[in-house]
Image 1: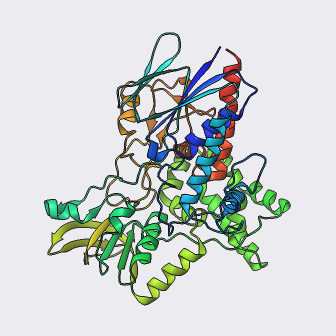
Image 2 (image 1 turned 180 degrees about the horizontal axis):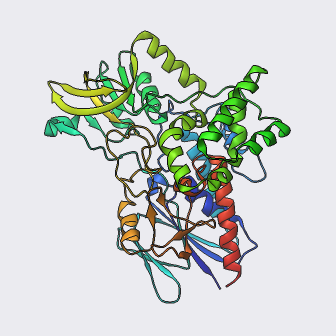
Image 3 (image 1 turned 45 degrees about the vertical axis):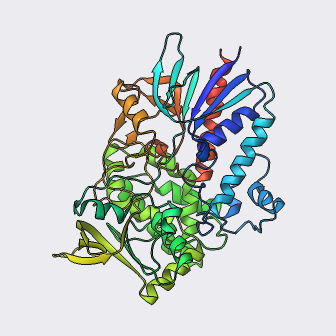
Length: 482
């Protein structure tokens, strides 16, 4: 008996799910279908651009995915004549090539399994008699599946922004909704002034890409708090086991208490010559347990008040990017503002933005050539964003998706197949999607960044790999029971 599995989405999570399932020859024969547009396979949003100025936000040593080779990514690059060291921050496109290579190897050696790829995107899931699910694609193709894995991942960043705006078509021409559109970014005049809504890693990507084009460009970055990501340092070790155990033993209460404890431990550790990054990185494996111990009120408080500060320390920029940003700020070509946008209007050959800086009583005006939506990637949430939500967190964890899977999640919500709350998509501890009636879908799984609602840490490669491994083990156990 062959068991059919449809994986919707072929970015990092979809690619690795397919690769690991194909590589497991201990289970019953599987028929695996991978659904996504061909341009996104193994690359998604993160790794599809050929812009070499867009670097990975982690060193190469942390990004290998083979179970038997912790240096796999570096080895892959070297075999292809690309200079790579374990501590290097390499171009993102190289990582997409690496993932595509691993999938190709698995597809060419499937053993008893079968594999096919469908170029398109899913618009609906329909349960049918016998426990199967029909996956409907926008092309009209319908695929029957015993199990479905939603691996839709991030959107392309076109997060909706609601703000008073005037100017019609003139304004639209100056509004860059997709910050990763390298082709469009290359066509702007060399003396342009970019106003970026957001000051996180997305905004820094755009700054790096544009700076490579022209040293005349100017940038204004604005987010609610005016925070920039911290930067990596060279290979920081983690805390010693005893120190880590002592830290975790103290993290028994709510987010305010935990924040106080972490700050205290960081201060003590740095006083002994350590680095704060060692403390933050040592916490990563324990974050899901800490998150699960908190009440809903605790989680809301963390998301609203603390998460932006945690994320700027947890999700760091390469040191080379930090050096560029510091240089641009010193030269006056880059400014950083904490605040919110009040109005945007077309003005001559550019834009006029009225903004209210943080803690200010009045507004100020900024003239810019282009507005770039750098509010970051979206997930699959329950709420729509506003212009004031210019950092990763407002009152909710996840942002609205604004791409092909919009219609799919709308259908899942409308038909009661998937439940959403203030924090986003609901899944259980086994990665199964929860229905509106709070029962789980036994054959519908989710893997990807929206797991943040349940585990918090679910956006970086090491954590996602762990989740993929656990989910595929659950699926193969379920397959064995057929």
